[in-house]
Length: 113
Length: 111
Image: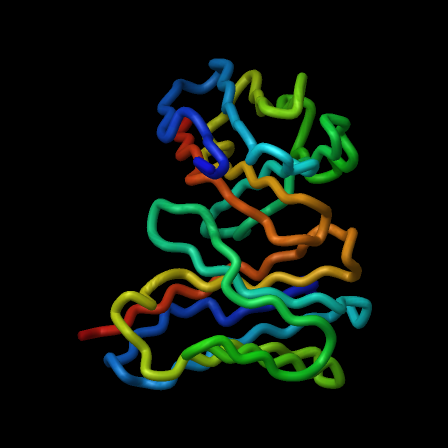
């Protein structure tokens, strides 16, 4: 198994632009999580899905952030419009069950200038 | 007060040293405790998983949970340069509950 696959690995964009981050979870995992990691705040849960349905989006910072999971093998996190304070590493993770071992992707390093 | 507090570090030790990493927490409902290891430019990976109080050993690694003190520790014996990474504690209230992570501590083991 290739593990959780995220793309792109790095994204540099200008303030106001739309950013789309992509994730392919491990096959057979029912849960998908989006996290954001910064030096100041550590690893923060943004949203998670169970069987493609969003369960808890209370960590999404504001309406500029949206996430979708159209099928079991693909999810996107979109930021529109992006702002410099969105600069962080965004991780996607999947698991067989909530509370079970999380498998993380390698992350997307986002820089908003 | 944050739910999970972790020493900010960084921590630098010589090869072969015993390393102690610690987290404290405020939510007495936490029952599942984990340690994740994160190498530079990689995602975190699960290192140790324990339920409730007690010790768990895996090779050079020992995880310890003291629920009465709301304190968890990770001990690394005979530390190696390959142990150089960021270590994050994580915990949850139940088997189907989301994880709360500490901010992580960066460990450097000098050859």
